[in-house]
Length: 449
Ligand SMILES: *[C@@H]1O[C@H](CO)[C@@H](O)[C@H](O)[C@H]1NC(C)=O
Ligand SMILES: *[C@@H]1O[C@H](CO)[C@@H](O)[C@H](O)[C@H]1NC(C)=O
Ligand SMILES: *[C@@H]1O[C@H](CO)[C@@H](O)[C@H](O)[C@H]1NC(C)=O
Ligand SMILES: *[C@@H]1O[C@H](CO)[C@@H](O)[C@H](O)[C@H]1NC(C)=O
Ligand SMILES: *[C@@H]1O[C@H](CO)[C@@H](O)[C@H](O)[C@H]1NC(C)=O
Ligand SMILES: *[C@@H]1O[C@H](CO)[C@@H](O)[C@H](O)[C@H]1NC(C)=O
Ligand SMILES: *[C@@H]1O[C@H](CO)[C@@H](O)[C@H](O)[C@H]1NC(C)=O
Ligand SMILES: *[C@@H]1O[C@H](CO)[C@@H](O)[C@H](O)[C@H]1NC(C)=O
Ligand SMILES: *[C@@H]1O[C@H](CO)[C@@H](O)[C@H](O)[C@H]1NC(C)=O
Ligand SMILES: *[C@@H]1O[C@H](CO)[C@@H](O)[C@H](O)[C@H]1NC(C)=O
Ligand SMILES: *[C@@H]1O[C@H](CO)[C@@H](O)[C@H](O)[C@H]1NC(C)=O
Ligand SMILES: *[C@@H]1O[C@H](CO)[C@@H](O)[C@H](O)[C@H]1NC(C)=O
Image 1 (spheres, protein in one colour):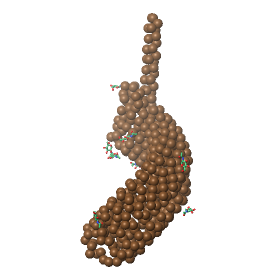
Image 2 (cartoon, protein in one colour):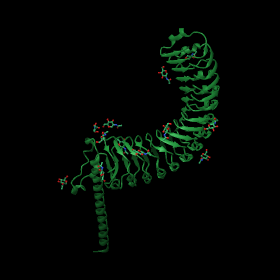
Image 3 (tube, protein in one colour):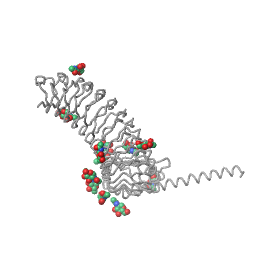
């Protein structure tokens, strides 16, 4: 044999050995994976058998020639035949993960077991799935704690555990998941404080913690999550101040803090959120005045501050919010007049100002709100005549009861042909509009007492 032939021979030998050993490797991996899936399937208390019929082991000798688990329902493999995706969403699975041997799946990167009847705990061994990118266990009956071992899944991009019965606190180890872009834990029974380590998750785009029993303050470190687009923390038991650092989250389009026990005044830095479309702070204990900087929320369409203890006057700067569609300030202690600038809010459909201490005449500029559908101004101290408010003709609900209004109800009200519900009672109106009632074909309720 010449040198060249010797070298070629060696090369092919190396190649052969490499291919052979990788085949052996693949085979033993997929046998292990197939066995692990079969073992788990056997523990499920009920399954939709028409879905998992494909989950059967071929005769042992034959697994290398069969597609193995790679052809099974809901199972996908990577190029060398190892399971990398398990998607059994909405598959009528009833059972636990107790006997799912996570360690048998070295390449598993995507798990979607959402919308089943899985119960029991999330096993701490789930932390052995070092390649895991996507984990969705939502809409099941998992209970107990989120295991701290979840912090080992450092490749996770998406973690969805919503609509289960998880309790205990959010483990601080979650702050190790540096790749997370989406963290959804809503509608569980999670309690305790938000770990400050959450502020390490700088890649987070969507953070949904709403509808739990979380308490304590909102950590100022959350202002580090500068890529956040949606932050939903509503319907928990959060207390303390709204951190001014939230004003650094300039990509936010939605900020939901409603239904908590937040107190103190609203930081003026919130006005820096130029992308914000939806600001919902209602039903807290917020006091002080509405920051004038809110006039800089140039993208806002929905502004809900109702049911707090806000005082002072409505800033005239709110008239700059040209996309505002829904402004709800009811049930506070706001005083002073309605700024005429609100008449510039040409997209406004809903204006709720009821149950405050607002006073002075109702500005006739509100008549410019041609898209207004609902206007509630009852239970204030408005005085003077009622201006013509129905020039757009779209108003369906209109309440000004319990004020100090005088004079006649203007003729233009006849223009409110869509009016369904109106309350004028508890004022000092004079005259009789009952002969005009024919103008309101949709009227369901009108109180003129
Ligand atoms: C899971 O395996 C354990 C033994 O490791 C066994 O005791 C238990 O009954 C199994 N669970 C189910 C649901 O089969
Ligand atoms: C079982 O799965 C099949 C196929 O998806 C579906 O048509 C059937 O409705 C399911 N049955 C139950 C009880 O969920
Ligand atoms: C292996 O598979 C082939 C074709 O699928 C089948 O004919 C054969 O009986 C199998 N061998 C064993 C030992 O089951
Ligand atoms: C799982 O399958 C469903 C429906 O086929 C699909 O909508 C979902 O995106 C899949 N999830 C993953 C992680 O592949
Ligand atoms: C879940 O599966 C059932 C039956 O197969 C089907 O009717 C239903 O639309 C599915 N739900 C979702 C959200 O995919
Ligand atoms: C799940 O299985 C348990 C035990 O067999 C049974 O009690 C329960 O009703 C099942 N749940 C559903 C939703 O099928
Ligand atoms: C969580 O729920 C389990 C029952 O599922 C209970 O045993 C445990 O005490 C609860 N833990 C907390 C912190 O509420
Ligand atoms: C949260 O607040 C509600 C209502 O005040 C209360 O019933 C509940 O016990 C509180 N939960 C925690 C964990 O503090
Ligand atoms: C974040 O906000 C705080 C308070 O508003 C401010 O002092 C700080 O400089 C901001 N940090 C960054 C990085 O913008
Ligand atoms: C707001 O409430 C806090 C107590 O939560 C109080 O110390 C502060 O004086 C109040 N501020 C205003 C303007 O009412
Ligand atoms: C009545 O509404 C129409 C548009 O529907 C408007 O052109 C007109 O000016 C209104 N009249 C009064 C008195 O508001
Ligand atoms: C508007 O009035 C109708 C008719 O009375 C009523 O059913 C509806 O709940 C009202 N909407 C609001 C937002 O008050």
